[in-house]
Amino acid sequence: MVHVGSTADASLCGAPCIITDGKHRGRNPGRMVWWDSWFRCVCAPVIEAKDTCIMSEEVIVARESENLTGTIKVSGAKNSALKLIAAAILGRGASVIHNVPLISDIEVMSDVARAMGAEVVRTDHTLTVDTTNVQDKETPYALVSKMRASISVLGPMVGRFGHARVSMPGGCQIGARKIDMHLVGMSALGVQFNLDHGVLEASVPDGLHGNDVCLEFPSVGATENTMMTAVVANGHTTLENAAREPEIVDLANMLNSMGCKVSGAGNSTIEIEGVPLESLHPCEHTTVGDRIEAGTFLVGGALLGGPLTVTGIDPSFLRMAILKLRAMGCDVDYGDDWISIRRTGRLKPVDIQTLPHPGFPTDLQAQFMLLCSLADGSSVVTENVFENRFMFAEEIMRMGADITIDGHHAIVEGVDKLEGAPVSSTDLRGGAALVLAGLAAEGETIVRSIGHIDRGYEDYVGKLRHLGADVERCLMNDDGSLVALQ
Ligand code: EPZ
Image 1 (cartoon, rainbow, N blue to C red):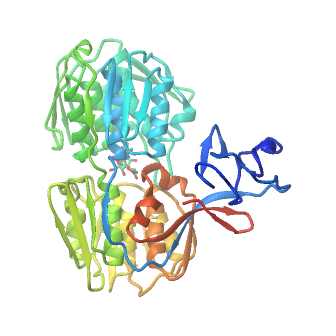
Image 2: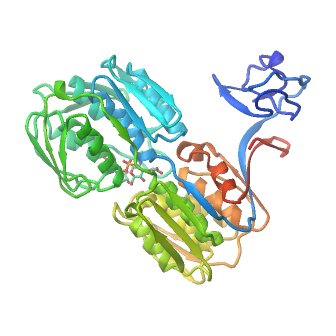
Image 3: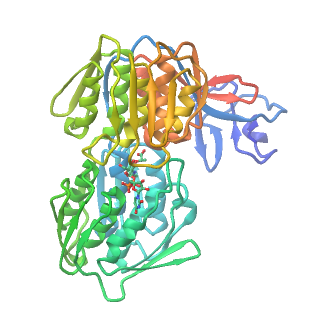
């Protein structure tokens, strides 16, 4: 329940107060900010209290757009920055991390670090993470349940204190998201685990020691936690079947800047020479560009034609995606830190198999399924990484896509046009793809549950508008009326 009215009577129903009427005056007319669970206007409201409470939610309204053209600088990689914050725990002192995206997941991870005693201060896209006063505390369930990547503090906490208590992360829409491989990797280094009422307790009764570790699957998280434990183990660790994602390399580079000795990151075998914890120190590091954000915008360019350029990204991070875009009939060019795309003819069908890097990224699966849904023929999209990552398909079928799900395969028959419809984000990447779908579809598409998108895309609407999209961030009231916010 939210209250529409003036701040004066916001407490009437004790619900988050959304002041929306357009009659605002002040610094940011009509701009809402989130303030201890209440929406409040940042200016002096000059509105009369309304006597009705109405439900409102933020939505993204996407309308058929002529094209997406121009240049966008991508933000820093969400899936790297989150782990860099955790890694700072190993270097007692103030580490500075640049190119950190302004997204809600980073806020959650910053709160996790704060809950452990760190001081985290953001200045624009730079975070200063001072871990001087980090203590051996339990990671709060309330935060871990918001974002499962919080489990990334496990390795650094064990490395620093020889002990950790981290709430077990839950699953999410795309799968069970188990952490058994994290535990196997760390156990090989001398860590013992005990599950205590939903809290995972880690201890190292005989200290951390190097070992030969082979992961059953090149899990990103398991590679990261094992690596962040091994860097202060006594002796040498060889980590085989390691994840090869660019974010792993970014983390290894930061760890080495702190005094660690990691080599081979980006390959299947990573070599780690343990060093004394006391020898580690804070560092200054710049997060790599977000390859999934870059890929998402490139799909937008493929969808509507472009030319569209993304900058701030190493094109080698997206080799497979570029290969598939070219196979679909797009002209793709790139330089040291940019990638451009243009399409003239109709999209061609393509088969996609998601795999660990350098295979096709699962985080671009929904976006490419959208492209396939408008291609001239049949495509098969196979999801090999997560067990339940086709929810996007169910939403886009509401817009007229012709998709048949058969286990881990989605058979996509291209159609000529999609139709705008009310849809709901099912996960971060599916939500971003639904907005793109709305730009290509006839009419208007209202995308709900956009909190998923805010988790991983900085100013997604603003960047799309910069490229010429007809898209708005709105408050939708329970009577269906829309109030534009951005
Ligand atoms: C990271 O998740 C990313 N998240 C995911 O991005 C990404 O999709 C995934 O890597 C694969 O690239 C972050 O970095 C925060 P995994 P992670 O461990 O580490 C199973 C996004 O949209 N598994 O490589 O959780 C697991 O269930 C998100 O930005 C186990 O069974 O991925 C999954 O099916 C979504 N046991 C598969 O392996 C384990 O111990 C891959 O998981 C670990 C994983």
